[in-house]
Image (cartoon, rainbow, N blue to C red; front, side, top):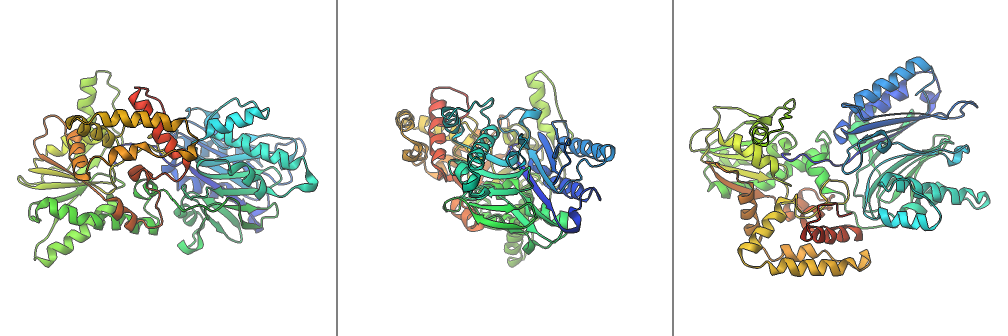
Length: 573
């Protein structure tokens, strides 16, 4: 993807059982937990943490070990720190349960206190809680106010701190009536049924009980596996497959709204927890974020490329002879394969071929700390190298990207350096529709100012003398914000409805076009209908359609519009 986005933390839960669960025998559990994290390293570059819980701890010794890191390479630093303790302390990180986390700091602080796992200590093992997860809530302040009204003081209003407090409050209430204790699933229901947002929560109690709970819409991904030697949970299926060398069908998806409960004896079961809700698994996660070494994700991304082919052929006027096909590294590569396969088939039927290759190469080591803005902008374009000599004069260079959000890198770096290759025309094809709406479930897109599609929408309305529509929508959004979230509608959708798709795409292309670009520029987007067809089990497409899965989403969209119109550059939730 050309725009750098932070999205989707990674979580790993591991319970050893059978011969592997004999404490102190080996570091097998630690190595497996570290591998689960390493195979998900794309999910967190800002922090990492790992906790190890010991069953039947000796008096005078903590029942858990915990390490966190916010170093420049946090996962590598974390594993090294845990490894040193394992060697020096003998029994450190040789327990039966492990809980790990990789953090992307969408809005939170870059310090150890913001890293998972979070801990609520207690001298009673069945009330001690370690928590890690992949979550973003829209109603954190509402939850905090409710807790405060019941006598709680929260030192932090971050999602993690509030979720931890909600869970421990429900746990304390249940444990205070031991004769009426209804089990951990009831505790999770009491707390999580109030959460508006997306979450996968994983936790361990000091008595050896562990759990994983996914939100009722299934917005965030989670997978689990059960074998003779262990039970494992992770954000991505291939991480479990790699760690335990098991086939795809052995790793199951954690059902939305259900809790995986792992008891102190190592037995595990799925239990209904949250009220059923329409499945709205995040499609952006499939298009862009998850690694494509999952068979299902690989197939979906190829289908996205196939679906773009008719638009690309129309943009070329059927002229495949002067086409050079490429992509923006790296997550668009599999989609590129699908588009290439289709175009090769069309060309072969006509006795022709298609020229293709990687002309844009991202230099991951390139960094610039130049203070002078003009110099910095000139150097920024060289984050990408190009392969010279492949594109011929008169060619149309089709560059596939997985999505276009802000458009800053496309305008400042990618298009200027592609233009150096001398194509007659550059066609930027996005495997996703234009991102029109803010996100509140995991991606750092909480303002409208950073969305090139909204900027283009404003351009069209001003050009056509319809700025009054913006003012009317602003007034309506303010009125809606006075209503409860469940009574609000997404006012932004009415604004986009006034501008035809083709008109908006042309305005986005103008926004993306850098000064001095010699080539003609065309921009193509996947349609929302084709996106649903290609990813049928992931209908969470609110970024593109404005159809939010929870009431809090509409409130966030309306707040984002009000913030924009009032020139308040702050997050909408």
